[in-house]
Image (tube, rainbow, N blue to C red; front, side, top):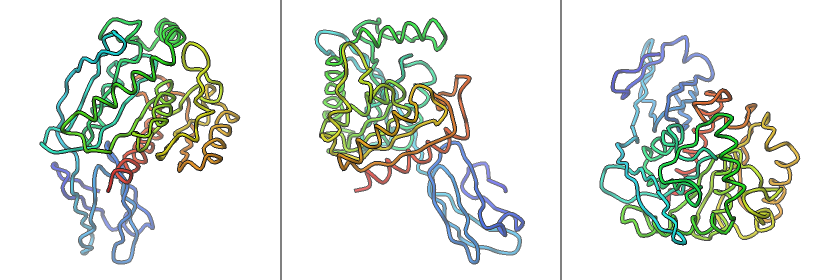
Length: 313
């Protein structure tokens, strides 16, 4: 396979295209299936591909790129007299785009999370990521993803009132609604670990059209902050779609918890899809020893396709 330096055209030599399926993996994926003259080619790519010709030893595929340049800024919001920093990444071209409330894991907005915010914004989303422990941590605090950081982050989680998380959610939703670059009625939530629980809980708000929850912790048990979260008992309040991403090797979300959560979605009639990967907890965090690049790339392909479909109208 050859991809030109501008990634506008790629050629697959005959030995590859004569296989029933050919998979091309790129860094920023969505998935399309393209029918050739006699063959089917499965393509994972950063945008839409078009199979234009099969001539001699080459199949030509045209790539229509959807990635855009982004801008980055920090926004100051006040929630119950506490300063909440919100990192916002948004497409640079003038226009209106869907908005995403982005929740980090317990380590807040370190470089690994910022990369994911920027990554998603490049697909055409205004992504707003609050510091989830702003009531306890100074503005701009990044908790290192090591043993001491884990203790600190878990303690911050334990001491944060659940009502504070709910108030933060409403504040970020309100911010996105007031942004001129956010399309009216097109707001979703996405999060990882504790942030996956927060993204799920955000979906209890009828302004959230859809949520992506990556290995969300504590939903069946109610473990989120001070007291017991009632998230699992309020699933019927969800009015949007849900995409749940789990690692089957994740001890923090064992099989019984996954089944409890899935059953609750089914019983409430919530449209949902479950993605299971043979991976550990935090497998999408690229600076950790449990990072699984293949599973993360596949998950992101599904996530981007999910958002594209949800916000298509």
